[in-house]
Length: 115
Image 1 (cartoon, helix red, strand yellow):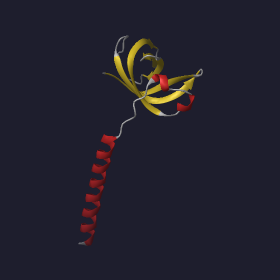
Image 2 (image 1 turned 30 degrees about the vertical axis):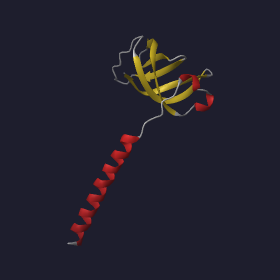
Image 3 (image 1 turned 90 degrees about the vertical axis):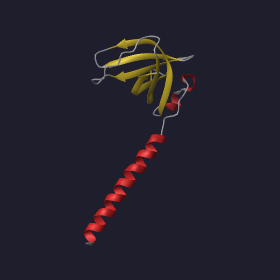
Image 4 (image 1 turned 45 degrees about the vertical axis):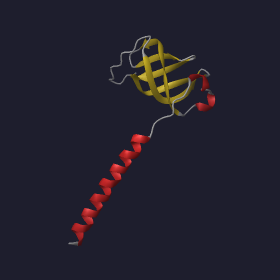
């Protein structure tokens, strides 16, 4: 009898914990950043950018997207079986990690979506 009660209690606690984590995760978002505020100290940070596609360079496994607000930044997107069709003039939101490449900030994107 005690084993059934313990099992029910554990199941209820596990489901409540999962529900709590889901509600917390819905409230978490990356802070939107302006391109002109990026510098070397931001390397390694996860950020979100919005801007207009200026140029797209498709390669076999990666896509380089030049995104501009008043300033420009290069967004590197690994294709990995994702079909992403971007063209100049598209308004996009990109999130990922900032890295420094040739003394310039570059966004290694996890997610790029048209807005």
